[in-house]
View 1: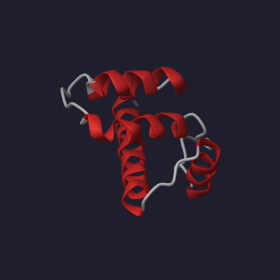
View 2 (view 1 turned 60 degrees about the horizontal axis):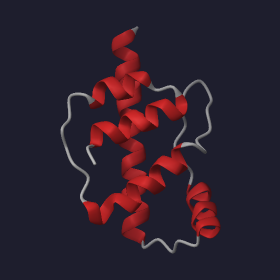
View 3 (view 1 turned 120 degrees about the horizontal axis):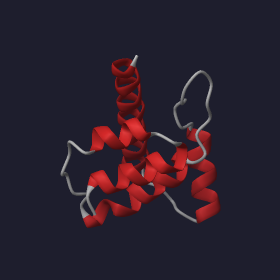
Length: 100
């Protein structure tokens, strides 16, 4: 599945149209073996807290997701989820800056 399609799905879940527009520039594919991490990220993204903007996904949210879904993440998988989150936040901030 194309990264663009996944980011579009994420944008619809929280109204991040700017993220979806930025994703149109990318034709990257998510490797099948990592698709489960992307799906976990999309679900965690729906639990995101907001202040003046989106806040990072907390380790507590990942722990709760892990317990509720019966998933035992390895440290590298948690790091990958956090890196995906940093990319999402950076993309959101960048698109917000260019729209102002």
